[in-house]
Structure formats: C-alpha cells, structure tokens
Image (tube, rainbow, N blue to C red; front, side, top):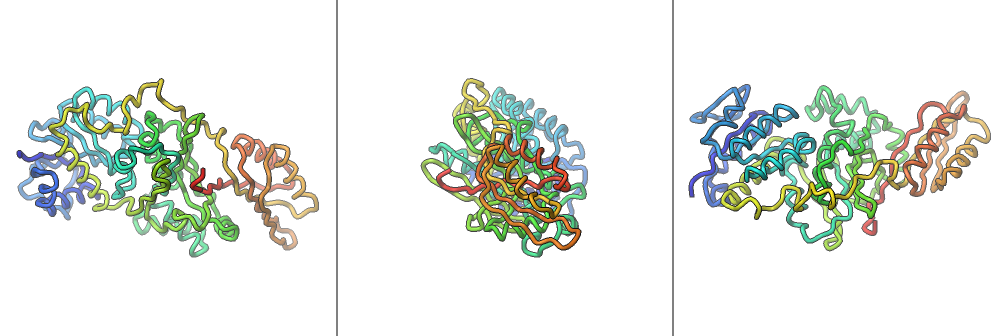
Length: 438
C-alpha cells in the first residue's frame, strides 16, 4: 500500500522525539500499520541537533506544511493556543488528518476542531495530549467502552507530583522544591500552569468528555493550586494516615458531572498515594470492570512520541474508512447534542470531606468556638489535633471533617476567618477516599 506521508510541525522535545522514533522504528511501524509511514516535511523555527533531517524537506513556515499537497497527516507539536488552532484548522481545510499532543488546544478549541474535521471527513487524534506515554485515552474510549464510568481521579501533572513527593519525603518547603524542579527542567521558569492546576485541568476536561460523553468545557473546571501547602500540612496528613496529591477528579452523579483539580488527601494505602516523582497515574472506576489504574511517564520526548506515533498508526489504519464509521473523538456520538449532555456541577455543590488547618491564639474557649461554627453549618468533626504552644505563639489546630457540601464549608471558613482569635487564612484541603463503593 502507498505510504502515509507525515508533516511534523515543531521540532522541540516532543517533535524531536517523534522524528527519531519514526525514523528509528520505521520497519516495525510499517509492519504494524500495514504500510510505510514516512516523514515528508518538517516545519520548525530552528533545527534540533538530535535529529538527522538529511533528505527531509524543511521549512521555517509551519503553514507550508498545512498547505503541502504531498502531506497526508499534519503532526502539530508547536503547543500553545492560537497559532496551533490556526495551523490545525488550516490543515483540516486542506483535507489533512491531524495528530496533536496539545492538551490546551483540545480542551479549549476541541469542539470547534472536531466539527470542522467531521465536515471534511478527516481524523483528529490526540492520545499524546493527556499523560504522555500512558494510553489512557484509548483505554477510556475503546477498552472501557462497555462501562458506565462512575469516577476518574488522576495525578496528571508530573511537576506538582514531584514537588509534593519531595515535600513529603524530605520535609522541605514548597518554594525550595519548586526551585529545584525548575533547575532540573521539570518546571518552567513561570510554573503557573503546573502548580496552579491549569495544565491538569486541560487534561481532566478531555478525560471527562471521553468518560461521560459531554462537550469539552474547560471554562467550567474548578482549579486550585498547591502553593499554599506547607511542610506541616504534609506531615499532619501523614500522621492522620493520608498523603497529599494534586488530583484531577471527575465524578458522575444524577445531578451532573464534577470537574475539579485541587490538592487532595487520599489514604496512604491507595495506589495513587504511592505514585512518586514526575510519574502520572489515572484511576478509573467502571461499573463492569471495577477499578483500573494507568501508570507511567506523563511527559518526556520519547514517552510522548510513543503516543504520537500510536495515533499515526491509527490514522494509517483508518485512512480508508468512511469517517462516520470511525471511533468518535470523544467516544460518544452526538456529544454536542444538548439534550444528551450532563451539566458540569458548580464547585459549591460538591460533597467531600475536609482537612482544615487554623492558626489560633492560645486562649481558653477558642476550639469550642471553632467547633460551634462548624456545627452551625452542619459540619461534623472526625478528628482534631492541637499542638502545644510556647509563650506568645499561635497554636496550629488541625481538623478532619466528615463529608459536607462545599458551599457549607465556604460559609463556615468565612466565619472562622472573621474571628479575632484566628490568624490568617484557614487552609482547606479536600479529602477523597477513592473507595470502590463511591
């Protein structure tokens, strides 16, 4: 069969890894695809010294690749929002299939891109957009296709997991470990997307759409970062039998779909609690399978390239199949049909348990006032830890609550922070058991 001709846009870390995997494993890939997959053209602003592009057409204008009639599949690895969107839409308009590793692009513009691709009868593949080399999208979309997905929870940002792992293992402060992660190249100079949960929210948006057949709705995702987590929080969580992880969580209920990223206490015996360093892991609860776990490298040149090339294999196999017979992008047909769409629940309606840390003046009756305020908002206390104070010190009070509605907790925290005997903001971390019965 005639080769599938690929145009790669972007020759950075992932682009370079994709180029090298395609060339190094060309024979193996051709055997799997049933036809050769060859690199026709590369569009990149600069060369990658790790890639031997001898004999390959090169251009500094990535839109040349999107318009090249000799390119069958455009591989978008430039990242970002607007330029990537324009590039992909141009490629689709020119009748090209698209493979991308760009989670921000899919989370924000995916609905529009999929509509355009459907109209042109081309494929858009994006396995590499979530969790690097872990084939979680294919697993959700195809392997678990018989299941009603009940919930999904994942460590889907390696930078945040690296920071929390070293805070726990070494008792270090957030700022100290972040600086180390930046020096090692795990965190960007501006780490906002990673430590504030935006990167994870992009990925969670995609996973939730595939799990439940709802439109991509990144703007409805709740995000909360890890910058306020202290070494003391990590230690106290450990004393209580929990580990703090920065999780993306989505859960289906009769009312709608939860979509949230935030620091979370999970029991130490859970598998997710034992995922360390920059690794990613996603736990999925299906009604037929029960719990399944997907673990591995969530980033990096060749792990992500593995997912890009796997998508190219799927495109090569499906290229002669009429588009209405292909697996739907978000697993379900009619995802944008509002009559079939579950709503995304506002964060105030979420029900979970909580860890609270308060700094209080060491006076009699303070703890009683705290307990009274929580009780007035229907919040039950499961456990209390109060440290001894030396003269003139504020006393840390650690509380674990039973499950309650987020709205009630927000109201209670506002009242607690108004007390004269409470110093500074109340630290709140949500607690999830991730139990098989939930």
